[in-house]
Image (cartoon, rainbow, N blue to C red; front, side):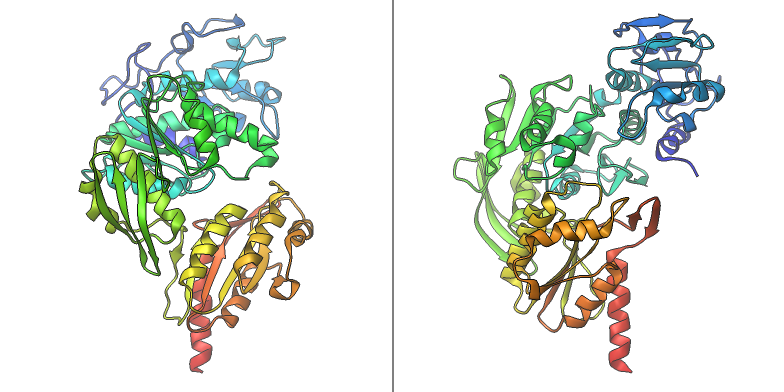
Length: 531
């Protein structure tokens, strides 16, 4: 089975557009009767800062690789450090597998078999080399970068829907999938590695895309996966507690997000869209470099794009959208206040591209939603079942506040907390659920390598009403118990995993789709009722 990056490389070859640079600084394109003209190592690293270089870089580079297990003859291997291992430990393996060059931050002590380049920053070098290798595709696409703790996926999907004047002309890279124009690949990271980003952008250009929407995670910014990517338009949605296990504190988390807007990644956006309902958004406005167009959005009176007269319902929301040139009533099938904000953000991205919000009304009303984001499961049951990706206390509070307002009966919740992630948010998530739910079942999310008992112990720190929550290890059983308690007029929210179709346990990944499991259990319940 090909790993995601290798699949992308093969896909680039099949598409007819060569995923390489024909000569330094020129984008490769089209088919060739003489076969691929791969760039050399010398061409790829020309004028880049190098601490030390050994050997002749005349060999053709057929692939850029960061995992020694994926090295094939002709590969350029980047030996970079990671959270779990160090690529420098596998240089000899890469050479044995046919690498034609090595790039590393470590000195070349005994490597003589292939060219070896020592650089100051291996990740930054990888990003620039990948950009050159794939012909600078970000110069040929208008890219829209979206960052924030919550809402990135919904805004990305809706923005793609609003920007596309013709089918398959707007690509998307995000949490659910990678839409390359004519084909779609499953996502393995919200924002993948730089070499895969440029490969995908290259394929989008080949397929006729004119724009692309990217979800930009804080991990991707911190790990330099988007270094050098040109984002003419960038959007900030919000910032709430998440990923503190990685970023250490909220200030470090915020600082990572700001790099998308300040030029720290290599280029400054032409236009930025910022949610000034969020206090971090208001701070960010003051950090934007001079000359950048700033469009603010929210429900506050001083926002450039704002929602007024918001009305929420069980089938969607309506509001008046106000912008400097006009006002129009918007009807969206998306549920809740937070999706009003997401809708305004997506409209703002289209507005930054020159579209009038008044021309988008029908498209917004026809939006089909996002997989695993307040996705309804309908199988003939007399109660509502929704599956959502909410996995922070803020996202849960927003979702449950909305559901509380539109649910005539009981509000039931199945949720969990991921393992090997920020432990401090677990009691906060539990407290948020207990604030709104009539009854909740805490269960396994993706425990990964962490003991589920430890996860439950952390979650119990947020229990305020013990008689209204149960801890059930098996997620399917927890959903089944919730189904048994649900009746006409009730609402069951299954939170945390959304679009995901698996569960992670230690070194094992098993199939598990909340939506499919819910349908199966509803059908089983209906069969038992008819028996």
